Length: 91
Ligand SMILES: [Zn+2]
Image (cartoon, rainbow, N blue to C red; front, top):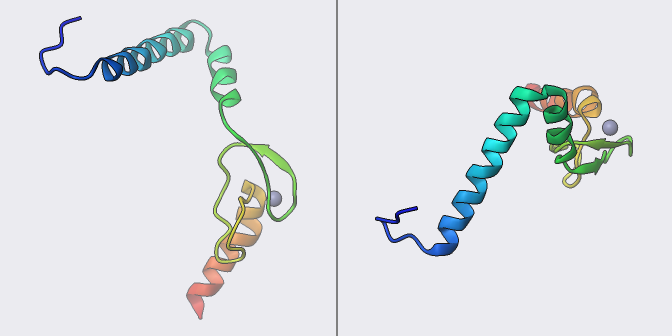
């Protein structure tokens, strides 16, 4: 591959690896959508909800203003955090 912009070699390698991974994922998505979905879900982090202590896969939700730290599951986000935010807006 030509390198007219004189990017460092490590950046070219990282770019090429990212492109190859994207192409492989595009191919998997096209040929086996279920396997693609499973692969993407497996890449998500495991978390423990700061309210109900359930474990879940995903990035979760910011529990502020109820708690300063932690990650809330979607159910607790809907039933606790969102309601608290609306209540804070009414004050
Ligand atoms: Zn929860």
